[in-house]
Amino acid sequence: MSQQPPYGQTPPPGYGYPPPPPAPKKSSAGKIIGFGCLGVVGLVVLLGVVGAMLGTDGKDKTATPPAPGASAAPSAPAKAPASEPAAPAPKGAEADVKITSCEVDSATNWAKANLTITNGSSKKSNYLINVEFVNASGTRVGEAIAATNNLAPGQAAQQTAQGLDQIKDKVTCKVTSVTRYAS
Image (cartoon, rainbow, N blue to C red; front, side, top):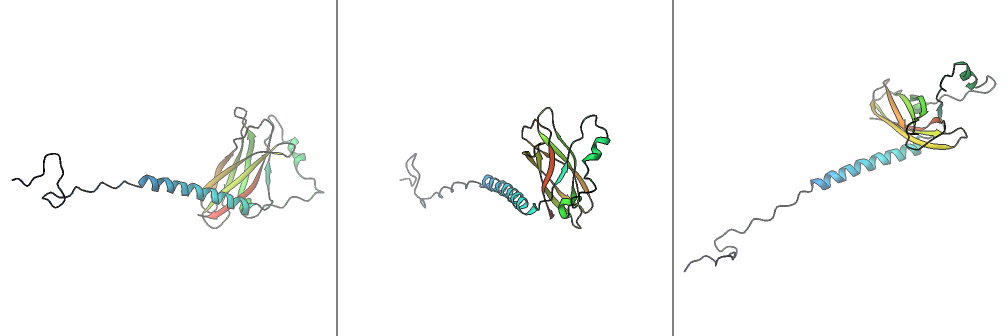
């Protein structure tokens, strides 16, 4: 008699054949990458919320786009008269951000503010800047965010805060908050 099982049947373990190997385990690399990306996005949102809450101290900067064909003379009356006290200069991180232009794109009707960010601190820093777009009646019609990272002390960077709201009017750009933290 043969000690082999009938054709088509698997022998019991220890009957002369080794047990079948276990099924391979599934890789969880996709889950790790997905949750890692989700964590990074959550951290960025959290930093933005904390920055918006802590960075606002009521010091705003404004800039208006020059009218096409306007000369330097009309811009002189825009300055505060000598009898009115000038607004105090911004301090801290707010002093590091200057609006260089403010406009609404005629093709997309999206507002944008071009910014120059100069690191005035003694450490390499990251910046998160919130900008709002205000129409002539003082109503906020849009907002945008700009950011830059690893800016060395004294180094400047050019950034654009691009709004995505449809705006038909001329706007004024105001920096509503600036969050600076060491990188």
